[in-house]
Structures are given as structure tokens and as C-alpha cells.
Image 1 (cartoon, one colour):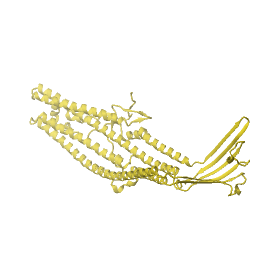
Image 2 (cartoon, helix red, strand yellow; image 1 turned 90 degrees about the vertical axis):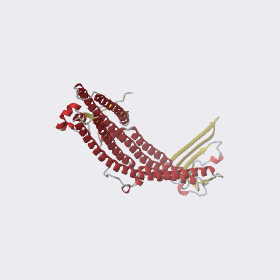
Image 3 (cartoon, helix red, strand yellow; image 1 turned 180 degrees about the horizontal axis):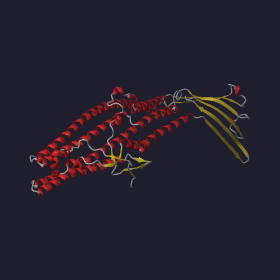
Image 4 (spheres, helix red, strand yellow; image 1 turned 180 degrees about the vertical axis):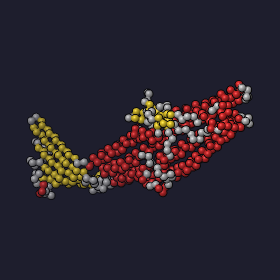
Length: 488
């Protein structure tokens, strides 16, 4: 399947390293320039125009279209539907039951029973009913006055289900589940945005590494051609061409490896780009841009534990509501240890105009009792719920400690990487000076091509390390945002 490709219509300059050295700015090296090829020019070539996608553009596409984020929103809708379902247990109920039997011209019975029930928050249920029955073979207990029989009463649990019951517990837990789903949604969105950020940074690093090796190939190729010319003129030994050729081959090998890494990182970054449920593929010429550090710092260069309300962290909020939900379940399981004692009492009257004159001697009442002798099932359910509640409490405490330690660790990492970045920048500058000096010495015949290549290799390694540390620092800042769940 060929995926559609994404490009950005705007053309901007692709950022080059600020540490590239400029030998052609030194008049003394004009002769050396023709001898070794335009080494410095190839490393400081005219900036190439290419379509680019900025970090904010990339992240905006992820936020708006990524299926995992849509799935997180769907889970919240599911929680709201469960809450609606739980509230349905308290809906008033209308019932009607009509049955008739006629056989060989005889009306055995006609029975009509209607009722209106109102469940309440506690186990009490209010009920009004009407019965109208007739027939030749009607059961005597079903006989009612000609105008029918009206009743109004209440069903009341005296032990089990009085203070808590299934419908109360289900509604409470559904409300907690809404809060859990909201917290879980924030966690899910932060996780996917952090993964997308890492993918973008890896792509940026791979793109810059490829450019560094490409410049190195240009330098090595120019140097090789210059050596071939000088060999023909008899000015240097032929063995120098082997040294130059090996260096060129080494640069090409590294460049191919960098292209492979870039292709993989770009494909991985493409996993996060969707438009209207269609996965998109980044075009080969699209390049990433170095994100601004301000996009990661969130107003404060370093976030300390004193400035954070961890009790409001989505992950801890999730566990808090989970614990409250489990506490409701434990309460329900304790309730199940009680015996079932249900009392029903209804006033009855033969006419709907006599409700204001109920006769307490006319009633319909009932009492139901049930108690398992050993309560093994109920006691087992209670122990399971209590163990699960304890487990969640331990997990919540563990998550809080982990969050504190992660914040401290990432703050230390950010400080360290910032220092390392400044050190490597100075090292790259010094590597550049050493290479210039080595080329001067080579020009006067006191050095060798091997030493020049070695100096240049150290410069390349320094440039690669600088890119790596920049990306690591940005990744650490992004990691802190993910830990604090502040992506939005």
C-alpha cells in the first residue's frame, strides 16, 4: 500500500552547524586550497533550501489526528456512557401485566396488574399499584372489588442493602471512573506526544549526522583528487593516494550508515503523522528544524519538587479515584455479610377516590429473610476486595516516590547536559583550530595526510557529539514535561 506523502509548501533554510571552520578566509591558505581541494568551502557550503516541518507543526498534527489520542477521547466517552447506565438504576419504572384465558366459551380469568415504582438512593422503594381481576375460575386470592384494588406502599430492607447496595455502589464507582478516565486520558496524550517528540528529535539528529558525513565525503573527495594531481606532478609520494582513497572510502561507508539511520528515523517519525485517519509518509526532501529550547522549559529552567503539587498529578489522581472506587466495593462486600431482611407494606383501597381515607386494617404486607449459614462466598469476596484495595494503595505510594525521584533525576540530567554541551562546543572549536594548524604544517612539508585525516576525524566526532548532546538535552526537557504531564 502506497501512503500519501506529506510536504510543507514553505521553503526555509536548513540550519548548518555554527562550528564549521572557514580556511578560505585565511589568505595564507590560498595555495593549500588548490593543493587539498576546497576543504573548508565544502564544509561551509551555501545553505541548501529544503521544505521543512517545524517541531510545533509536527506536534500539532499529532495532537489533532493521531489515533491513540482519539482513542483516549473515546475512552472518556465510554466512561460517560457507563455513568449514564449506572444512573438508569434509579429511573422510575412502570409495569403492566395482562393475562386472559377463555376456553369453550368460558372465561376462566382476566387479570390486570399495573404498578409504578420509584427507587430511592437508599434501598427503600416506593410503589403504587392497581389490580383488576375477574373470571369464573379466578384464584380466590386474586379476587378484588368490581372497581379494582388500589395500593400504595413501600419496600424496605432492614439489614442488607439498606445503607449501601449494588445500584448505589455502581453509580458511585461510575462517577469515580469518569475522573479516572480523565486522568488516564491526560497520561495517554502525554505519553504519545513524548514519543512523537523523541521521534522528531531522533530524525533531526539523523538528518544532521548525514549532512556532517556528506560534507566529510566532499572534503575527502576533493583532497583525493588534489593528491592525484600532485602525484602526477611528482610532488608527493604515490602512497599518499592510498591514504586519501582509504579516507574517502571510510567517509562513504559512514555516510551510507547515516543514510540508513536517517531513513529508519524518518519512517518512525511518519508513524505519528495522520490526516483524517490516513497515515502519511514524510517526503524524502522534508527536513526537521532544531526546536527552540523555550518550547521545553515551561517558564522555569528547572522545576523543583517544592514548586510541584504532586497530589494533582494525573497519575496520582488516577490512583486516588481508583482507591476510592475500591473502597466503595469493599463497603458493598461488607454489606453482603448482613442477612437479607426485606419488609414490604402496602395500604389498599377499593376506589381511587378513597386514598385520603386509608383503613390501616386493609393492607398487604410481607417479610423476606435469607442468610447463608457459612458466608464463605461473601467473606471470600470481601478479602479479595480488601487485598485489591491495599494493592492499589501500595501502588499509589510507589508511584509518588517514583515521580519525585524521576523529577530529581531529570533535573540533574538537564543541568549536566547543559554543561556538557558547552564543553563539546569548545572542543569542536579547538578541533577546528588543530586541523587548521595541521594543514599549515603539511603545507611546509612537516606533516602528513594521515595526521590531517586524523585531525579531521576528531572534528567530525566532535560535531556528531555536539548534535547528540543537543538532542539529549532536548529529550531530557521533553522527558520532564512527560513526567510532569504538562503536554497539552
